[in-house]
Length: 80
Image (tube, rainbow, N blue to C red; front, side, top):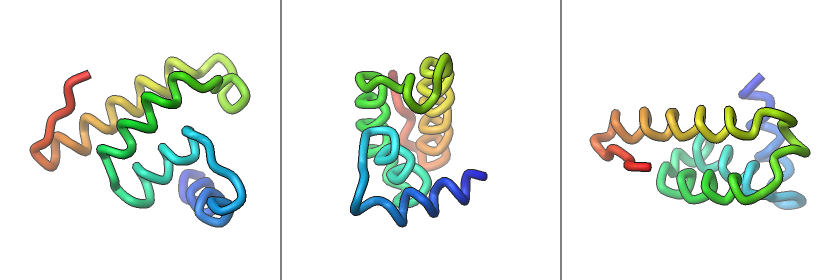
């Protein structure tokens, strides 16, 4: 399912972008963890209700954890 989502994001990146899709692209396509961290903070400011009703906090916390894990593996621990 995640692979399908990433394919759609890549196909549509020229016609549609928002902090959520840019975050997913940074994290799962470009492996740009610093960019993903920035976009994650922007996601908090955007209404995720359209995409993930009642799941905004879970989305943010899960991806903060994933960013921490990826950065820890590279020796660059994030401090939120």
